[in-house]
Image (tube, rainbow, N blue to C red; front, side, top):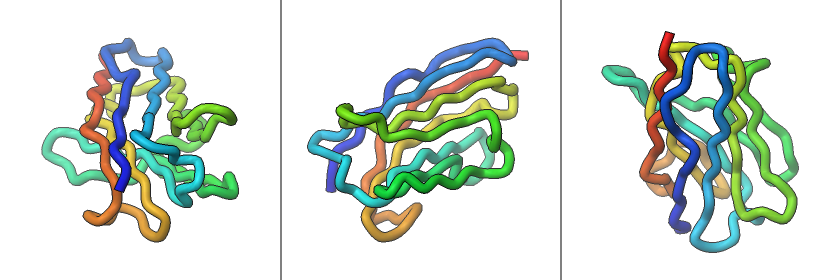
Length: 119
């Protein structure tokens, strides 16, 4: 497993943007599935976006057109650009990495970063 550390969370007004970044303790560029999850208070953790090693992406319906996941060239990170933020985007955001499956307890998880969107 790889240790993952998220950064970039914070408090922002609705309509503004934030960029989350997740760094690995070792190279993550060769890991097939890199993803962002989030968990709001009282709700289950949900998949926000995933990017494969080939660069294909998938997004939750709630964030399509507003969020962009990327694996920037030359950087050992997976980033999540969040635009037009809404109060319902408030949650703890987690980075995830695994070669074979999403959301597995056997995958690598970051410790989470809080994103709070005020109305």
